[in-house]
Amino acid sequence: MTRSGAPRGGRTARRKPHILVLHGPNLNLLGTREPELYGRRTLAEIDAALRARARAAGAELEALQSNHEGVLIDRLHAARGQVDFILLNGAGLTHTSVALRDAVVASEIPTVEVHLSNVHQREDFRQTSLLSGVCVGIISGFGALSYVLALEAALDGLELRR
Image 1: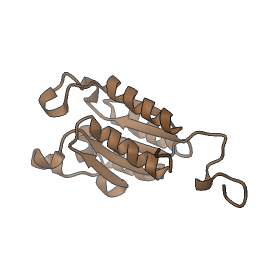
Image 2 (image 1 turned 135 degrees about the horizontal axis):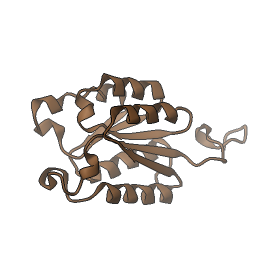
Image 3 (image 1 turned 90 degrees about the vertical axis):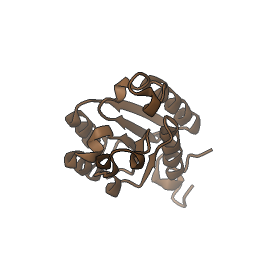
């Protein structure tokens, strides 16, 4: 507690920290799309594991997947003032979308860029991220574990790691 009686970190006792996970295009096909590259875990399995870990740490976790850039941008806009941390796998939009990058900036929310594969071992165009420069960190190359590691970073940033 601070001297004013408010909990440390500026959060009131009324609301649990809220973590938003955004999954970009084609990630709805995880488990069946190129499993040798992306693994066999489905997006639903990944999201369930993340929700369980967040809940155990005292946080709420919301996940959204969309194949549409505008849906992801709209959710980033709506997150302002409502979400405490974002995990973002922009998928192919990572390399092409100035608009998604601008929405991350506009959200004013700490964001970790997440990738299942090691983008630096892939095609040249995948080695350029328009998101990295506006994110607090990048986790790439560990399959589904990349999301878990990103969540741990968010929990640490929110001082919820247990």
